[in-house]
Image (tube, rainbow, N blue to C red; front, side):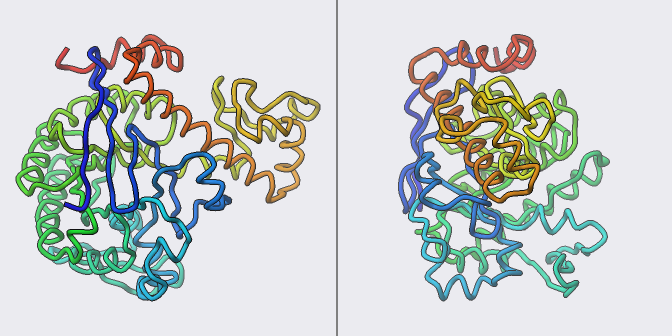
Length: 378
């Protein structure tokens, strides 16, 4: 296989584990938050800055890169690593979520999905085989199978049909994968919020023996309590010896609770997106620096943070930048937010190794979060 995964420590009181995921472009220490670089760039961040904050792996988007600049051009450049000058691991999604989120702009059949470009309205057609061709050209270390993401809410019939199609497409992706020795293909579990369907999806994917598994179709609008209830059971349907990836979550509560249940990998555009709207993630919660109350606040953004932004700039200055739509404000807040989440997960990993993950969790989240969402097998 293109990757290997080893669990090096476990929390005896939860499902949390610390691991090492080895890829062709280096090792990843899990649990890990993965910054999203949709168009071969993590917005407002240079690769040197990403290295400074110890971003071990980043994501790029198959759908967007297919449309611009085109996967053929990326291949001519030597793949994503050379194209964007990032020499560490990369994961590319399949574009499934983006295609299906277009709603009335797509048409699904058994072979694939016809969709219109959000850029110019041109028509395109994705099949599992086409997605494997695109992801091979992009050259990421970890690639995702093409799936159908069911929305929330949806009927049981729709969720079951989507997961069965996802299962068939997963096999087609596996059969048509071009570079199995240099790219690890992950299967994606679907099934909506129906636990028996989630189990059915997992059992079918596990039989295909993917090197890793993603939990898709969560954090798509369902209440937090529903999401946690489904997630707490999903992890038990997946192999212990393989990495588990929860797609599309990027807030401290989801990251730490997902880690509690036994998830190893997370991603989301949230930290850079809210940064562009003038919001910072801090140890005390979110802080909207554009608010007037910070106009004369000359304290650090987060007194408990050691990042260069918090060491060198005040809330008043950052508010000034954001209010005037200065690019530097977006850059500084993006840097801080990513630093915050990466340090949060580094701390979680070390706490698992040191045997005090439950205490670490309680330092960051209310006690009721712990008590309510303990792993079911307890």
